[in-house]
Length: 378
Ligand SMILES: NC(=O)c1ccc[n+]([C@@H]2O[C@H](COP(=O)([O-])OP(=O)(O)OC[C@H]3O[C@@H](n4cnc5c(N)ncnc54)[C@H](O)[C@@H]3O)[C@@H](O)[C@H]2O)c1
Ligand SMILES: [Zn+2]
Ligand SMILES: [Zn+2]
Image (cartoon, rainbow, N blue to C red; front, top):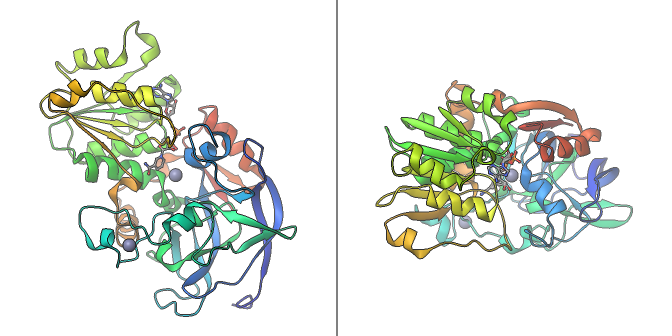
């Protein structure tokens, strides 16, 4: 590529301060250093977590360094590679990964977890392995959200935070496997390990929740109950296979009591895909005693959840998941292939396709409950 080894000037949506709208600016993307890859971002989904780090910073979420380029659900094409990179070449279709898979750490070597800790503390602080980011704007370093930053026309990731995918993949769709769809789907199949014939409840029918529904249905659940405070989410949820829709606001008693009655004792599996500590408690209490499993998928870092140990003493299990339990580098290309084979929905999650200049509108649609996934096409 003609740009190899040179700084690329392009556009990115910069978050200058928490709580403020994003500003599309001209930025500089430095060439990749050793073990890094520069990619041309083609598309990025807009996930609730992007919104939460902007508007919930210091409340539910840890305050990350600003200015920051958000976006962690992207897909693109390799533009150039840094020294010592062997797994990628210019032109490869790739998905950047906020969760790495280095293949060498104790977590990567264990089949029990996907939580690779390679450069974890650094990428959480918005920098790559050498402690700096590759993005600058107006002479200032701009941090890279989770080491990714897909709300930009180009970005640089660590090679451990990138995976090569099938050349036939449609990047405007498979970007959703970089976070939301992979997370919800994996929460059902890898973490809850939903069994055939079981009764499931999914709280929150956004993209993550619908992907959890897709996992429950795929695993052969006999019944999937969808819970959301926004009834506009119900028709799409039914298309995904939800059998009953429950709006907690329609009932004058705790939603868990309604669900326990509906299921004659509670669900086998409950998945919390909202990120609200009260909903987390409802999800746990909507599980049946003896073997009910509750998986927390919704995100909060600083808030505390209340629970009665009695509910655990009576045999319920409470778990959480990061990225649906997938080992990122090896598993995500397989999900792309399942989508190409017609076994995994992606188109059905996309409600809006927007430009980078419309990224604030995408956030408004998400926060206003009007979208499932908006795709930003660069
Ligand atoms: N664990 C992970 O690795 C991971 C990955 C991606 C996203 N997340 C988190 O998953 C959650 C969902 O993300 P999303 O992009 O689907 O968000 P979204 O905003 O599209 O969907 C959330 C849904 O929850 C509903 N809701 C709000 N309050 C509710 C309540 N009290 N009861 C029932 N439903 C309620 C909303 O109406 C909405 O439909 C977020 O917290 C996000 O940060 C976690
Ligand atoms: Zn690792
Ligand atoms: Zn996300």
